[in-house]
Amino acid sequence: MGDWIGLAVIGFIVLSGVLFLWWLSKPYDISLEEFEKRAAEAPSLLSAGFVGLQKILDPATAKAVAAQEDLKQGRYDKKQAKGDGDEAGNGEEQEAGAGGSRQ
Image 1 (cartoon, one colour):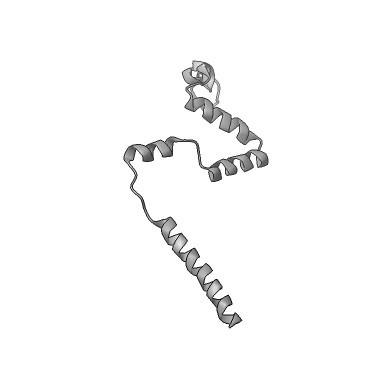
Image 2 (image 1 turned 90 degrees about the horizontal axis):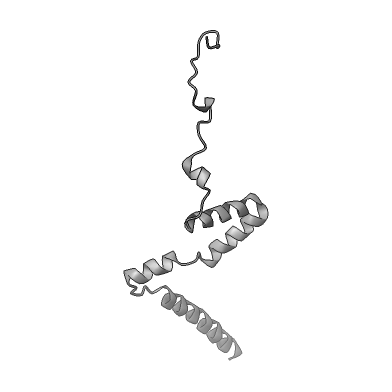
């Protein structure tokens, strides 16, 4: 008799778990505005955890995250926005000849 009671308890636990997962996976109606609001909110806990872990493993990530937050808020380096100028030659045209010198 004790075996049947134990088997019934185990069966009840398994059945309860399956019913809970079925209830949890049922879709629900959500408006487009509410979906966009939730998507625009702060990142999920899992995403935040990965960013924190990456900050620990790679110290340069902290600077990158800070730069991304600045860009989202509209702050950025004005010189960088205008451009740093010409990289090679500083605006002077150079002709490449056979000798490599300009005359």
